[in-house]
Length: 113
Image (cartoon, rainbow, N blue to C red; front, top):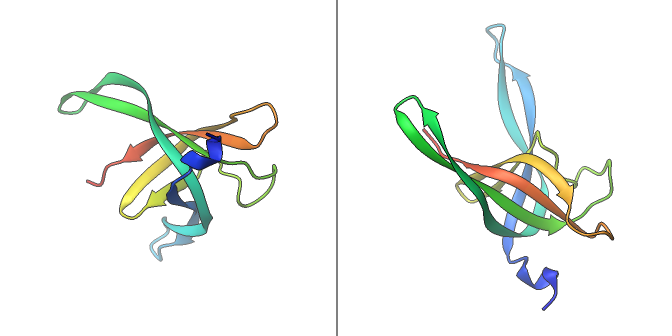
């Protein structure tokens, strides 16, 4: 089976846009850059000390088709993926194969407060 056959989840790539809030600061809004078909797998996990005690953290490996460098469709670490109400913050991006056909985005899921 090819790698492409596992790309079964539609994720919307979003970029941050800072806008003045009228009080001297900025608010961040997110603008959709397009949809990527992806595969999401659990990556490494670790325990860290949080404000209320130990907390678990798991990184995710998100596989998507590659886009050329400089393209607005190529994921970057300052962006995020959205799947419905779920948000995946992109931490790093690397090529998944020698031919550069796929990218692996290391991400963590953002949990709403």
